[in-house]
Image (cartoon, rainbow, N blue to C red; front, side, top):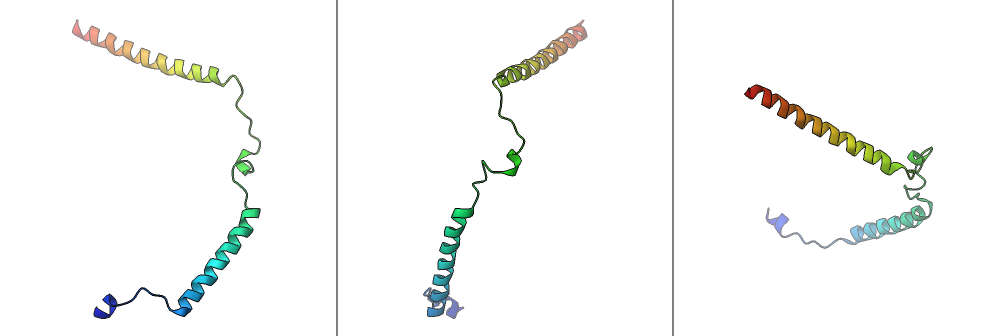
Amino acid sequence: MALFIRQDESRSKLQEQIAAELQDKARARAEKDNIERPDGVTDSHYLKDTKQTTSLAWIWILIIVLAIGALIWLTIVNTTATMSVSRI
């Protein structure tokens, strides 16, 4: 336990040499990959055969909102109708 506490955090020459080599390799790979790496947005495979949203998209949004509103209204009307019938 005492040996573990007294350990220095300094690196040996071999460790420093290995760390320097790994950093050089990482830099070289980053430079190489930076040129060949796709950006993943405009050249992605999932974008193949897709269309851009048309100018009529707001109509679909309006239809969905109206349908949700109609479902909420029908739910409220049905619950109040059954409550008024049960009170009689």
